[in-house]
Length: 156
Image (cartoon, rainbow, N blue to C red; front, side):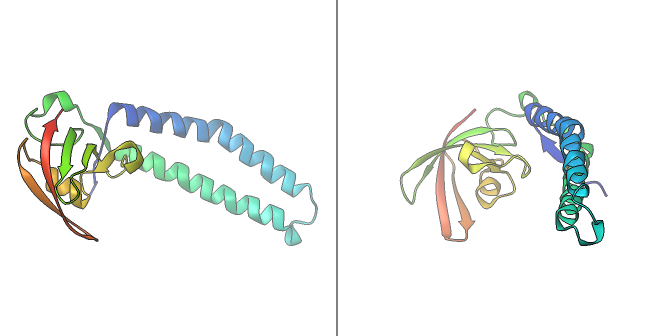
């Protein structure tokens, strides 16, 4: 069974660019590192060579994971989704009723989540509490520190 990954068009382009960079310049740098380590002599006792080969394996694993992610990716067009309801790629303004602080979030797939940029995963406790809700509603999100109540102030 294939688990689709929903991405914005921008994130898909970022991943495609990253894979291209890794496959070209990244692989070239990796090959140079291995060649340099090989030049240190006897491979059976060459720690630099062993480390470079291990690094190469992790590097190729990263490429493989990114390619798998792209293979499962589906583009989300937010313009076709309802404007009055929270869904993936919604920008929301919420008020934390516990602390009275106001936050702006964008709901994204787990692969795009980045709290520092205000992007929260729709599968996170807060994301799940917000999904499908409308302006004016109050939701409760059960998080490790307890329950946080939010009032939905705005949806873009």
